[in-house]
Image 1 (tube, rainbow, N blue to C red):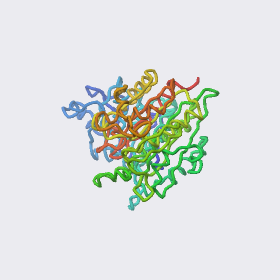
Image 2: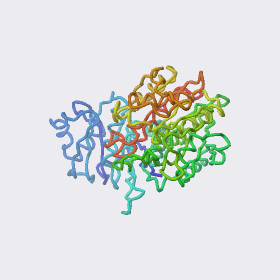
Image 3: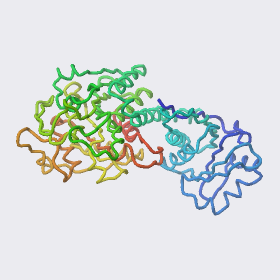
Image 4: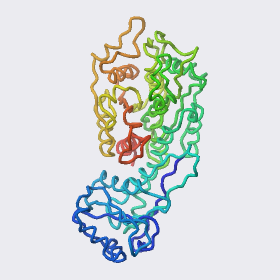
Length: 489
């Protein structure tokens, strides 16, 4: 997998900013006052840093933004990156400042003069996340970014604070890699194998093959994949770090490629459907993070891995299939397949693990993109407390999320003439009726949140913390929610 940039924390007074050959980054507050490290660098630069700090150009910078002083005289650095950041900056501004460094990180690496800034660890996380570069399929020799050295007043304390953040960055990178992979590489076989490899981190991983799914009665999931040569699978990942407490269940949609099936999608843009396993990717990234940081919580992650292809064996519009729960579903549109996958996995998760709550993630509907764009995921829930926990965590991590309504009127749109329900309810409220469908597979009294992440998984442009491509949205928010509400001690 893509590895985060190597970051070391060293004593500020041991750093040699004048002799460092890569990029040197430092932070100045509003007004441009220089701290001890900046004054030392300014002397080597013959006062050029101080002149810039007093200039209108610095005054125009917004928090987290930077200006480069290229190949400055008197020092070895290829550039000095001056970033505006106050000491009282919040987490979001600190990560943005780090991302500014990560965006321009090159082979020569960077020396970050963080001194005694209280957000040094958060800055390092922002740097790591934005420095991500998916190069697995580029034939030119990959040139990894150089080492990053944070010169800080208390290196051991900052390193200890940053350690779980490094685990988080690796979890986000794992998710991004999965979502960025093409479907001829990330088949259901390959996806399952990558998850099974996480056993070396202490996760318990179990792969349910098609014969197992037939015995369990997961017919709605199997119907989605029956037109593909790639066999459908369910992968169960358990992290047991919280004693005897019932686990929190995370359930992810893992459609490794979605043609739409017989209800085939238009050709334009279909290449992006490699990301239709984004929900499963987030679940995998969260589970990796929990294992790496040895979380004191019980969490089970379940993903349904299928490929939705048109074929002589593929399910047809008008077919009726029976779920593991026992309900029958009239398939009106084979391109509304994710909810069929989730229906069986949601029921299995509750039946086997009796969790304390269930959160599912899926790139489920285009309707949520129409409603919320690429800034927010849609949040649907039957439980205000669980929804509130997630929304608070998402806000704290800067991951956009917006709660959407549910109600009997939307549920009524799923009424079928020939079965217990239809798999679509028409164009009005499409994201809500999709959630209403899933709600039918949640047991009474089970706290549940559905996250429709279609708009935030693979946005059309880069974001503050990610280059163009997969964002890994949701790993940070779920990790924080688990840390804040489900960990012991």
